[in-house]
Length: 157
Image (cartoon, rainbow, N blue to C red; front, side, top):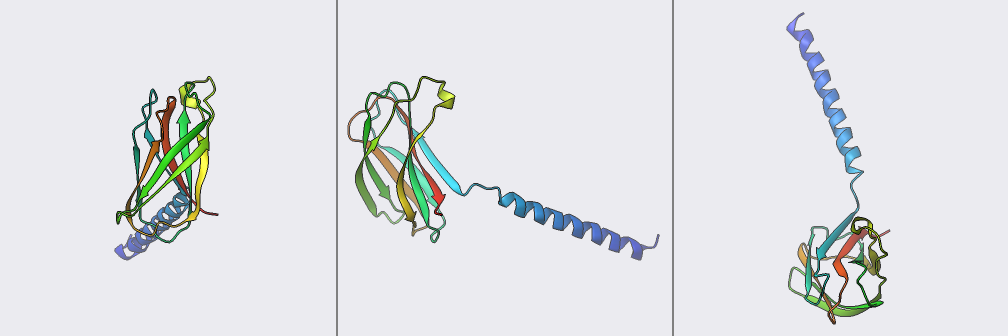
């Protein structure tokens, strides 16, 4: 075989491989989840201290929905949860409010398959700054039975 006949064949294989890799990258990127979930553990025996959740942000234009998440266990004795919710932006601006949420104790089942309780918190929200946002959740009184709290961020529809 002449050297001039080998080069086009190698180029063709390389081009085919490159196109295949590009298609796989695009297809794989389409499977990425359009949501982010940030959760922090609490002291389930008696949660009373502030729980901080750090949310990194690079997207300053997409409207997103925020959902609060609480995981409880069978020792939860109340039916409402009053939280002080504070959000601190990367430029140190701070917004704080009180929320009262209805909760249900977890059914008697294995800890690995207990469900989470979720509440819509904000819709169509845009985080205007890049950097680390701090979400601080604090109960207004000590609570027993709350295992974890967090936030889910998803693209608005």
